Length: 297
Image (tube, helix red, strand yellow):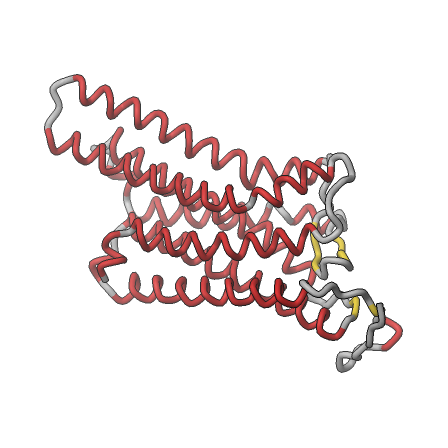
């Protein structure tokens, strides 16, 4: 396939290599850009509403705002990667910019912070029902401390990938990534990012379901029972939000499994990034649907 090399400014020609660009690359790049622009717009809108409306200055809304903030920054990172990919595809070049590895690092870090932000919401709901008198653990100060911890831990755990030089530039997908396969880093990241927080969220939901059923069988004040059911409903909604991201991230999961046998498609990362951008759009829409006070505002 014939190709033309356009030289970016201040980059030696020797550092550029022409590459093949399939017909569907640019539409996929544009779809990813549009998806992330929508998420950024919705995220900024939600955060502005929460910040400006004093009725939203509660601990539950603070936890939701934390999730929105992570989604916003995550989409900005994805948008940067999509624009970089689009530029390379339009110019038909292979070129790794100075931010490529940093964007990959941010992706792994923010994914962890995002999933643990959902876990914080589930833990808060659980404490509200099971330990209603322990106000200390539900206080704003403790929840802010937990938010800080998730951000710090989330940004610390992927540093090992940078120190070991495991993040590489993939020419075909125009992105830096941690190679899939049966290696420690992938297993370590998968457990830390997905498996641990999601299992804990499901476990909390299971424990709360059992608790509410036990409350229904015995003589319980109507207020306490209705509050328990309300919090259970909120955790159920959190699980639905997580499942949206998990279901639409199935292509990436399949590619990781296929990589164990060296059968992953050559352009698997491009496909995965598109599905990830779409899943974030659905997440923000469903978040608005599930947050009644935010939807009303």
